[in-house]
Image (cartoon, rainbow over all chains, first blue to last red; front, side, top):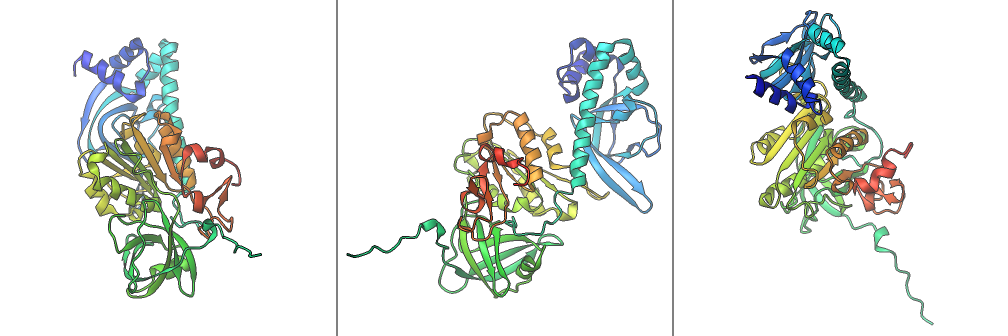
Length: 160
Length: 285
């Protein structure tokens, strides 16, 4: 992908929507394009992966593995983000990410992202605000999952 | 002087019961079944509009309000998708072919399938909430050229809780039709989406002006879904919800299902979000 196309793709990605052109260009400086095949593991539990992903196409499942079983807790796809914690700090992964449909993505090294945020606080504020939106959205979705909304309700309601 | 007989308002007269018999009970999931009723004797079963419900009388057990889940254009039979969650529903889904059931209705308001002609139709369902929306989907598909896009977003607890899986797959293959299903928890064999139904909004593009939305599911889910729809610029008068309340008489007489100024059985169950907004987030209503 050439530089012009890369900037265009970044500008159109929902994560960067509304970001100033100079900040999109800064992201483009840090971006690496990757393609990952079906059933590949992007990272595993405990991995020290420091990459943040903007997914352009495909589908990835976040899973927790326990003895004898694997639980799929979330899927992310085109227009979404993966590995947001890498942009905040180093540390082992709590979940594993498995490719369900071939993925095309842009990756960003977490350490370089943090450095860019420190060097340019305006960019840093913009970037972290967008990252926070992702975290809030994920937190709300997790809370809704915890509510177990579809569990049977006993009572006299119209039983749908 | 003669005294005129008192005239009962039509709305409080319970409509007569039609006798039906069970044609079949088909298992949809481990706890949900689709009951097919056919006429018992000469009296035909009543027609219905998408989104309406019937009161089904299980003899010796009681009467239950259940949404009609079949194709409104299929005459002669009525379909009900029932989750077995208590004594009465358990009795209903355990009826055998040939056994009798009393049917009153149909009752209530319906999905705005006529008003949605010429527009995109967005269907958002959670859990067994897909059942009362299925007649609207049938109606749109039967008159496919009268509508623009059909988008179905469906969320369930787990893959084994998904209703009508074969039909969902068939609908998803049709032109100008997008069907996305997600589950709250999935195993490794599930290749679809995992996450709450609101996460599916990231994968669809909605026309702010030309879309009519129809939503049915748990009330909390509907509140979050409405927020997603409103964020995309769709007006409150174009968002329709099917409300659940404690229905007993189905004709607005007993008052069990009162919600603000409305009786859900008579004025609903389908309302615009414009109508429901003041009452949806009201504590203890």
